[in-house]
Amino acid sequence: MANNEKRQSNNNTPKPAAYSYSGESRTYNDGRGRTAHRTVVRLVKLLDVILVSIPFAVAWMQYYSHQVYAIIFYRKGNWVVIALFVFLYYVLSHLYSGYTIHISTISEIVYAQVLGAVIADGMMYVIMWLLIRFLPNIPVMLMVAAAQVVMIVLWAVCAHKWYFANNPPIPTAVIYDELEGVEALVSQYGLDKHFRIIRKLHINELYGDNWMNLSQEERDAQERLLIPQALEGADAVFLCSLHSHDRNQIVKYCVHKDIVTWCIPRIGDVIMSGAEQAHLFHLPMLRVAKYNPTPEYLICKRAFDIVVSGLALILFSPLMVILAVIIRGDGGTAFYRQKRLTKDGRVFEILKFRSMRMDAEKDGVARLSSGEADPRITKVGRFIRACRFDELPQLINILKGDMSIVGPRPERPEIAEQYKKELPEFDLRLQCKCGLTGYAQVYGQYNTTPYDKLLMDLMYIARPSFIEDLKICFATVKILFEKDSTEGVAEGQTTASKRSKKVEQK
Image (cartoon, rainbow, N blue to C red):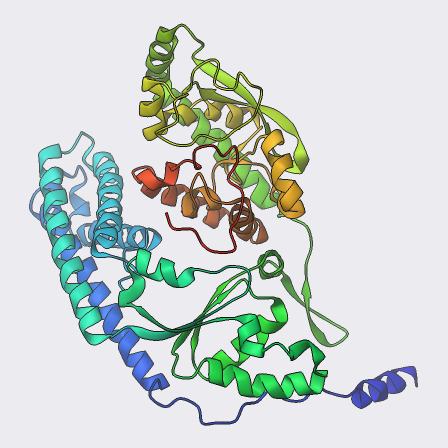
């Protein structure tokens, strides 16, 4: 009887009105055309994989394979080796965004693919060493790498020109709330070849001054009229830090009308992205909880930390000794210790090679570096910062368990307190152990604002995965040679605050 009453109560619950809009759906961007376009783009990408694999395949078949110890390996084994190179190169190029023709410049594509090819060649060299049982001929591999670079440059130039000759810039609208200036970034990053901004609106401009005086029914009716008008003629839209209701209404319309949507999220959006799907009371639910990875993941992560940091310390110990001696040449210490925050706010002492003068903070104020122009940086310090050698002693912190290979970057307690005055949620980064590298380090910069750093770290925390950790480790290699990843804060600033309401030009 009770079950029947519950069922009857559920059936009588009023359902919200269907969210629909007047007007026909777009026909010029139909599914078949989209599928055909994606197929052609994939074939163009496949051509790159084939071209880059040819030099390695020729070198293996004509030279290295004849030196393999096991004669029985010659036949099918040769194709296995070539297939392994193809797999490594394809995965690494994708990881470094080497195939994002539509949003990358030619130089970015070439850099990403050359990096992927070099790492794949290096891995294959080690495998060949194991198969041949002595060091393979290095000049041959260097010739392979040179031929691959030529193939990559030719493909990148031709593919880039082909893509934009056949795909004119997409008419794009920008709707923002707190974060303005995305349209300037489109031009600054060379994306005006892909996006053509036709309209820019603040969310208040979209709804008008009388919005708050309307009833909910009147607002719903107005939205059905105003959103289509705002996005008329647009095939893409940037939604910049909109509140959830405004964003959801626009996103539903965009999905219905097949308009590609790019969202800059808010903190709550990123937290929800890690929600676990569940079913309760015969209803779909999303379960949101604090960072709580599986024991298997934590065991694998700690084992990975110990093995990698241990091997790296052995490998780099001669270099570390040399650097320590050179740094001590100016009369100061080789290392410096600094208090940092890790999981649950625990304070530990991070260990780094000293790159600044001994009296860098003689006034007692904690401050970030302002980059190459910072007068506190020593001559040796500029070199080890550029090469990231100043971070090497942190391998000891990782081995001790204070840090992990991958995780949010550890912040100084004094600077974290300053950030929390403007951004109380900043402590959400401390749900997991801090890391030598991480999502924010790979995709952000040294001077990334606390808000954006928090968003990126929460993206990592939301979905803990050992595969994601490996991806971040490999992606770290890419930023080691990018100068802007170590760009300092503006002169006179002590922290990376504030997140401007308008995106600042670099």
